[in-house]
Length: 353
Ligand SMILES: Nc1ncnc2c1ncn2[C@@H]1O[C@H](COP(=O)(O)OP(=O)(O)O)[C@@H](O)[C@H]1O
Ligand SMILES: [Mg+2]
Image 1 (cartoon, protein in one colour):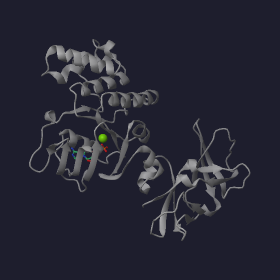
Image 2 (tube, protein in one colour):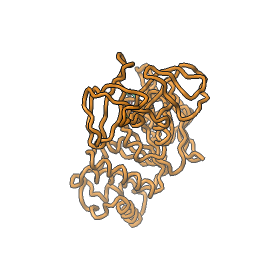
Image 3 (cartoon, helix red, strand yellow):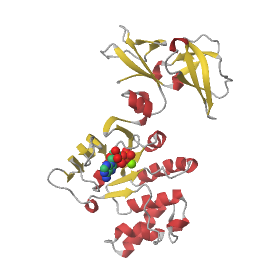
Image 4 (cartoon, protein in one colour):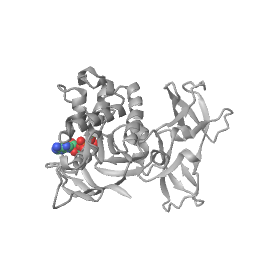
């Protein structure tokens, strides 16, 4: 059963032609971690702010549990929505200790209860020992966890986090992905996160919502999203891919493209003849003996440490983009060499344009 329900939620700012958020329908289960993922300006923050009550929708309905928080006739004010928010810049109070920061939203509680709850959430985020320090004495990752503790302290129904990883450097970012997911699950929180980074979104979320220009493109688990992107936008935004256009053969299992015949993992019920394919770089497997179905010349090698990213131009491909292929780092590959590869059907998917 869904817990948060957004129905046809729309925001049209004055003097802009296009709605920032356009008829968004989304339902979120209790305890679920959802990430709104998309490029800058696609309407993620606006969606989050409408949910929190900081931005008034132009139209649409917001429900949490059995309560309607917003519709045409009424709007519950932010402080009555039972929503905790972690802002992008954390927004901690610099002149208050960590403990007082965390107790800030509990001013209607009795003092002993406030202290007890602050201890609980500070222990949850692993920072109780820091309770008497001030925010500027903490690292970015620690401040982030304090902001999360403060949001969780009043036991909100829902926690919203706007770009929680964007101010952290690479190493810390990976740790915080794990920590935030762990803390939210421990607190049984239902959470909506905003991110423009696919790796962050995939690492923390039960489901991901990809948005573009105010419109939802796909809602899926990270695995399904990567494996079966619905359209070209999602395929390109979520990981790297090769997009090929082609003609469906009558067996409904092969597509004729300009690089040759590409096999799908199963027979499709797709009815159109002209189709687009997404072929993941790791689905292109180099053959040692040169006997692969496809072959081309290596134009560029980018070494990442974990794998090599190759740009391979097939002879049939003179005027189009080269294929992107991932190769294991132990293979010696040089520019201008010819190589041959096969495509794994499991990493090929049909996508809408
Ligand atoms: N207060 C505002 N007034 C006018 N336009 C706004 C306002 N806030 C956001 N926008 C516009 O709405 C669109 C979506 O913005 P936003 O939700 O912040 O995107 P995101 O968080 O995905 O980067 C952008 O085009 C942005 O310029
Ligand atoms: Mg934003």
